[in-house]
Length: 332
Image (cartoon, rainbow, N blue to C red; front, side, top):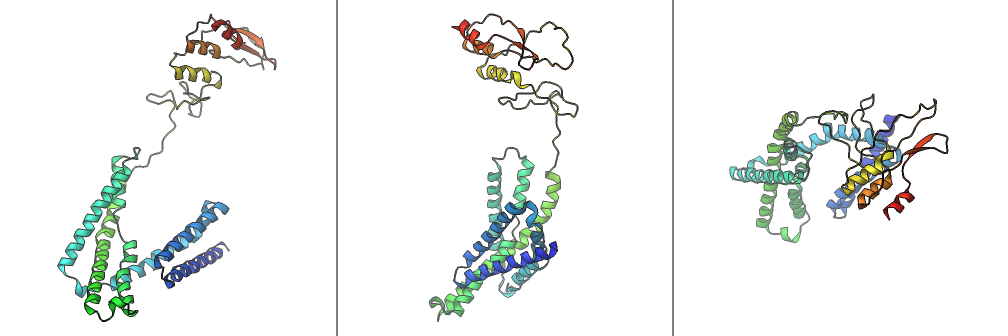
């Protein structure tokens, strides 16, 4: 079944990750093991999604999330709390730890605000909410809090030269490691519950989710679409489904050229009504011809163009202006 395959994939990834983590630690490169696990997970996810789609890792991710929230996080924070020696806590250490965490939060807020400043599409409240979301500290601090104390205990056990027959040095390193542990625990207690509540409150007050409606180009205050070659701002009005109509591509070159060169686009003169065409033969009309636009750009005078009709290759009648050859001869 699909659930059985997801559990097998999870067990395989879990065993490989544990092998990488403890394998690197065994050879004296504990930090490399953590980096190897992160790289392994990211690589597997990328390759799996590229092969079978975006939702291919959802089943394994849900298993990992469930186990972490119900087992892993509980064990992590329980062991962290058990490692704190409350008999060695005093007001001075707690006070300096509180001040250290507070200074770190202020610096973190400033850095987050400076990082969000270039995002002009974000509002002031959205940037403030970003600072709130970056303040909680829990998982990383809990994972690394005991690292210094574990290092001291391991050095004493392995009888490192600095820790042999040097009780004062061992006591000094132990006290410093316990200060680090106490500060990490204090940062978790100060930030995790407080900012979790703040995120749930400020998220409802400062964030809004709006669906941008399709605005017709003819509506008051509507901005025209960005002009590109072959597609310019649509005229007033819209289709039956509410989407703005786009101008035909026949006169887009002339409009773009006139706008680029600062020449006012000439309005086509209304033509007298032609004889009614038989059904099934559509008429194609063109606006200002390209030779006329080029003549205005370079300042040459071109006599009034004679608009006449001629049959096209497919039998339909077209309206044509002065040809390019005729315009070049007149301008020269």
